[in-house]
Image (cartoon, rainbow, N blue to C red; front, side, top):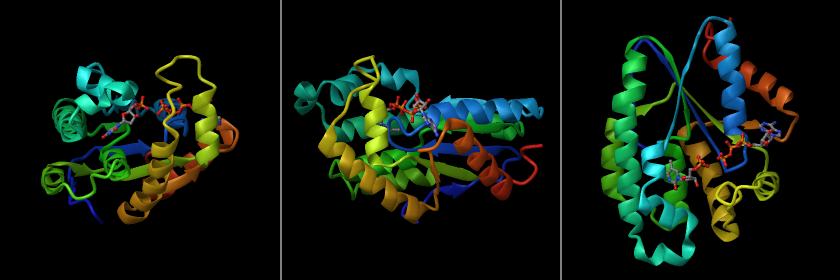
Length: 215
Ligand SMILES: Nc1ncnc2c1ncn2[C@@H]1O[C@H](COP(=O)(O)OP(=O)(O)OP(=O)(O)O)[C@@H](O)[C@H]1O
Ligand SMILES: Cc1cn([C@H]2C[C@H](O)[C@@H](COP(=O)(O)O)O2)c(=O)[nH]c1=O
């Protein structure tokens, strides 16, 4: 495993979803949350980056305004997102895990690793050092409908931010997600199926890996 994350010993259960834009994370998190709630387990759902980081000029300039990107130091962006992750863990994830809750996060540190490598920042020792303070989820899912399908879904969106595609980078990113999945033990599953079928696959994985969570 490339990332020196720590294994938590808290009573709750921590699940992370990763994958390309349009890979189906949000839709499947919604489905899983409803399924958990119907069995009496109301999950805490969070996302990284949080809305605070997403609204920051550093993030919006880098992610959505490539013409202004040269003004942003990519390491500064990694710092922002890393700080945001630590704070989200401190404020939301860890307190809920201490209470025995089930926490689901939309994106996590594995997205950061795939993104950094795709941008050519593969050996940031300081980043790996900070990862020692970041818990490993009990289960991390990589939603993967295939590169073309995720790009197609994003391209069909109407909001300009949600439909933003950066073809060359996205290709690198897809490849790096595959590598990170192998290195970090992410569980891949097919999201190029009708949503209900992907959800059934997902429930099967959750049942296998986290027995007793879904009643
Ligand atoms: N099997 C599937 N699983 C998940 N989503 C699917 C599936 N099949 C089709 N879709 C559709 O694909 C789209 C995926 O969008 P969604 O917002 O869930 O992806 P996302 O990974 O959260 O994207 P982003 O990171 O850009 O927010 C939705 O419109 C969803 O209905
Ligand atoms: C955690 C993390 C995220 N990003 C990028 C990846 C996406 O383009 C956006 C998040 O938007 P979405 O609505 O969740 O699709 O942020 C990143 O570059 N580095 C990170 O560590």
